[in-house]
Image 1 (cartoon, one colour):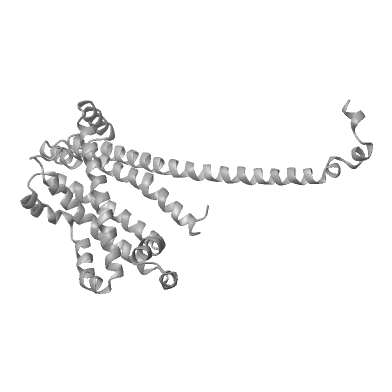
Image 2 (tube, one colour; image 1 turned 180 degrees about the vertical axis):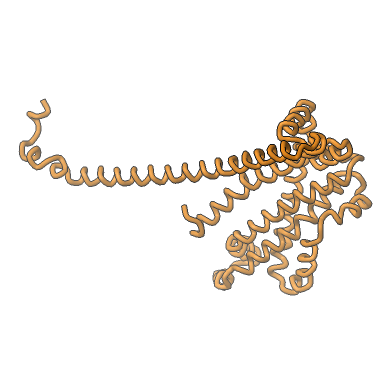
Length: 303
């Protein structure tokens, strides 16, 4: 039936010549689809590598750990193997101790880091904009950054007692200097033309800070936030290990200290691994995607 309706001239010229525009569009659509499929395959491959490579590294380390336990011949209460630690994980989970410790520490860490980010950002912008303040307080901020946060614990216990105030004070003193220095470093790398353009356009000081300088300094600011999180997590663990009792909750640092008091190496190793795991999860789930998106948006990272 269709043959009877087809123009013989068109049939002789072929489908591409019979519909020249439609053929080209179909060809372009095919090329676009091919490029899209190739890009999706590359993204899938990168995602698999990002997932498989760390898992493979963890499995290798667990294997080395087990081999060392077998070769050393030391008692399990001194050098527990992976299965011993896994058994301790199960016991702590069944008792609800592990969930309580993780929730307490993660909650404190997130609240303390958010407060540190707000304070550190405000102080960083102020010091970067007002040169006399930067000259006066810059060396002090750098000195506070290198001061071990555990040094603040005795003073914090005297000032705040065995309460959450002690933990948060130590955490803030560990995180805020890193965020300030990261933001100032990022602002120093902002081209001066941006400020000149903002002045020409009549931007106020707040508009200059939040709409021009801060967006331009995002890479350095993000590095400061990452370092601030690392310092806040370390400071939190130090405070929880030393300050125990009173109205303080039971965190991962407290779990680690309890393992030491009981000479339970399985509990000690379990606490260390959970502390490490939380730090890795925050890095991979929060900071790494933001950093990749930021660098890719500025053309500093291939798609």
